[in-house]
Image 1 (tube, rainbow over the protein chains, first blue to last red):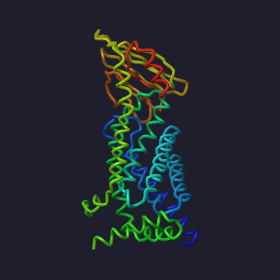
Image 2 (image 1 turned 120 degrees about the horizontal axis):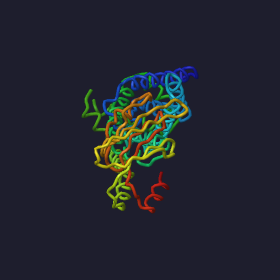
Image 3 (image 1 turned 90 degrees about the vertical axis):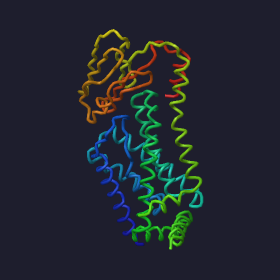
Image 4 (image 1 turned 135 degrees about the vertical axis):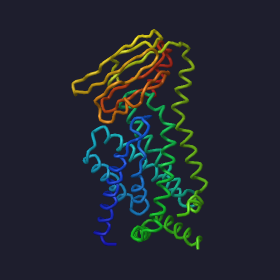
Length: 195
Length: 141
């Protein structure tokens, strides 16, 4: 994998993340039960980045996506929410991924990411409103976060199994990084068992 | 795509992590309910504050009266809060997401209407909170 291929891949992931966030923003949320509630579908991009790139590069994907999304019609307060949500879920998923493919699966990683995404947003919301009672929305939000997270995890798993480019880049990274190699081999094994 | 096949890859730690996080998400609610249980006073007030600064308060009582408070600030933010008997709601706001208006009526202790774009918060609390409980909550928040 040349340097350009990697740069292109990073840029593509970030761009796809931006598009997903924009689409998600235009979906009107049917219930006004909590401030700043979001499904967090762009977590899918964070997961793909996390599982196929080095830490340095996946971090790049996350902040580039955040920055561009905010510039395309966000405000300072929406930036703060997305910032807290995205980074909390990024670091949470980073830690959980370290448990390795024998203990956790993509679904668990992404469900945890989905919950932490909402936790981050609520922490910012309650500090802006300077009130603890905003945190009382947490149970509802974490439930929606879990379901969105499971859906995102399944989708990300599907993508990683079927898109050849993603496989190839994960394979490249697996040569350098032990943890990525474990995950890569586990996904190959899964596929083997199906046949 | 086969959903069963996807769900089969769930590992034991997945369940542990998700359940732990789910239980942990009830923690703020637990702390709050515990704090509320210490307060016996039944009378509720609705406190309107912006950026943590208290602006107005309504006493919630079944007196058939309707009170109105219009919030304005130097950024051009404008919200109208109405107290109708025991209920409080945001009737009008010029914020971008209108979540506060769509939230509807609130009437129980701990319920909030938040208008994050305008940094406005309407919160229902017991009128004479226990001094200890109050400081405890302040530390957490």
